[in-house]
Amino acid sequence: MNILDKIFDEKYYKIKHFEQDGKIYEYLGIKRFRKALLHIAKDRKDEVPFKNYFLTEYSVNAIKKYEQMSRKSEKSHVIIATVMLLYMVRIGVFIKDIFDVMFLLFFTLVNIITNIYPIFLQRYNRIRIQKILNKIEV
Image 1 (cartoon, rainbow, N blue to C red):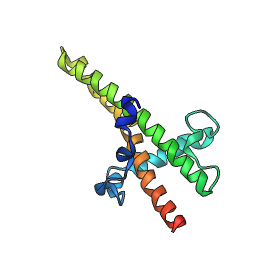
Image 2 (tube, rainbow, N blue to C red):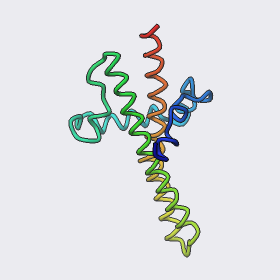
Image 3 (cartoon, helix red, strand yellow):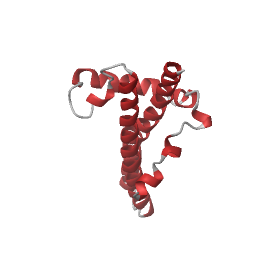
Image 4 (cartoon, one colour):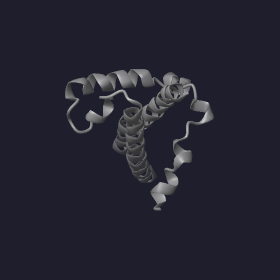
């Protein structure tokens, strides 16, 4: 078992108490983010990053597989966001002028849009998937 498997274990993916109803993500605008993302992806369903955005089959196994893919996607976004955050800290330590500040702000915005919100979306979707699976399996 490698270090990433220890970090991203079942406990990491478990829905936390504060996020169980998904309201925290809705407050942060995740529904608008999802709508914008799906608008971009709808015409590109067969392209590499977008083909995993849609369920193509609605069986229990397909939903479980989709949930597993969302875990992999979330893991990737967390790793990339962490690397970007470390780079931003490095930039922040050596700020020299306004251009460094502007670059840092831009880089922060890019990290939020390309990594943080996708992490939120994966977690929000997992809440919804768990509700569906709980209803089906009862």
